[in-house]
Amino acid sequence: MNSKFPEMGLTIFSAMSALASEHGAINLAQGFPEFDCSNQIKKLVNEAMNSGANQYAPMPGLKALRNAIADKVKFCYDVDYCPETEITVTAGATQGIFTSIAALVNTGDEVIYFEPAYDCYSPAIRLFGGIPVPVSMDFPDYTYNWEAVRNSITLKTRLIIINSPNNPCGKTISQSDINQLAQIVKEFSLFVISDEVYEHIVFDGLKHLSIGTHPELKSKTITVSSFGKTYHNTGWKLGYVLGPADIITEFRKVHQYLVFSVHHPSQKAFAELLSYRDFYVSLSPFYEQKRNFFLSAIAGSSWKALKTEGTYFQLLIIPEEIQGTDVEIANWMTTKFKLASIPVSAFYSDATDNRVLRFCFAKNEETLIKAAEILHKI
Ligand code: PMP
Ligand code: GLN
Image (cartoon, rainbow, N blue to C red):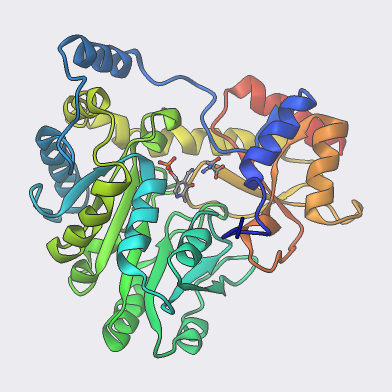
């Protein structure tokens, strides 16, 4: 077999979850909520199944859901997307990102993205013959380095991927960053994929800035979102993409042969659910409280927290006295202390090790207290 990914193993999320379960460790590694989705969502999807919404949904998604997404996006960001031509429902954000890359990247195209980076960008770029071009955000504040971006641009650069709020570092993009991005996109005629799955989880009074709201970026940007993060049902794998009609047309050409359409009853349920705005309006305070709870529980320990502006992840700096790489320390903590986290070097193509671990705080308070007690001991 001529493997397309000879060197590739399991994702760090699967690997750390498996290690956590093998050793009975508290799993603050893979990012998923410990709490269940609401009974209202389950009731709606059951009703949809019982009402016979069990055959193929339309290829771009149920019309009612696309309408509801357009209303939600208008309410949140005061921007218009046409449900007919500019919105497509996907099987989660991963499929939205993969399909966007498939539609936009041609052989030899260079794609810039920022590290630390979520794991699904680079493999998809490579699969379609593109060349991943990672640009580091400046540690420890994880600021965008636009000078470095400019220095990375060549005649082959086609696309920039943005992820705000960023997994793993929680950095959000500022208006001034977006203006610099817009300038670069215009100057070099690029496209943008904006991964905004944590759009409703931002802290300390910050507002999520959606890239597609910028007048010069809207026509060049495909925005990807996921219901899993917002409704505590990461296992349902439902999301959507927004973009100008010409990009979405190309997106759908791939989408129709990749999945054709996605889970029909869930789409029917979300078409109704999206009108209950409280779900996403109350999500930031909900997770801000959890972040603060976790931070106060670890206060006084040897673990220093980096700033988290959004997402449900907290980065902690490994105390100096602990020897080893972040991967060795994450493994050691899981097996010996029964607390699993993700080593942040896994989010870098060259395994940059700033001695930082990522902890998911989308957990009940008892779990966070137990995790903090362990951190106090280490
Ligand atoms: N992008 C980022 C930044 C993520 O953290 C995740 C998943 N946690 C995804 C995309 C994928 O989302 P989904 O589960 O909807 O495929
Ligand atoms: N997005 C989740 C995380 O960052 C992982 C999802 C997955 O396991 N692919 O932890």
